[in-house]
Length: 254
Image (cartoon, one colour):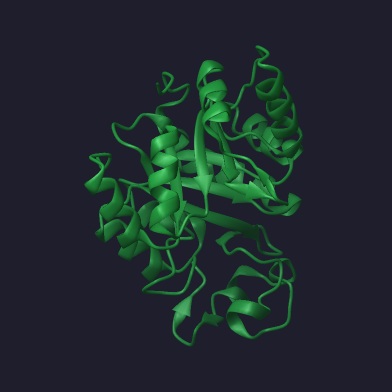
């Protein structure tokens, strides 16, 4: 049974459907068009990644380098915001500023991966300035970055566990120990290096500890059904149409 949500962000009647980087089936990842398509399909949880420009503007972009998405072999953090605004993805998609996304999709909640230390303070400033605490969940591959964003915001902010806390959770689940976590959720891949990360036992123990379980990044129907059977609370996908159809079929879309 799903635990009571620790944060308003997590309060949702069905399984939380996350559009991973906005989805990438109809538009390039992390572009305004991708997020718009997900929102049009009814997705209210949008996952994205953020970096800061050299002058401290927060952009929705996954990689450290612009090369894979734009062909420009340069680190995004070395450019000013005005320069980034002139660069396009797949020829005609701008790299969106995070503030623009918050304003463009006021009914959506964002799961934000703070990719590097330079974005931490600008991201916290942005969250405070837009007063969007209830619409944000912070994650990162760094416990320290997650903690710092939460500290700088200065108000209760939903966050997932980082790598160090994930190890502590896995040990607690393995040994069936009680443990306290300030996070509201664990966000895991189904498998990592051949180890099953999301199982009925780990889901049950997370719920016992008051944590939701969100699985990423799931793009096949069979695994979606398996995760629903396990009782996960959220699923992240690149294929929004597929996840929506599965959740509707299972009466888990809300």
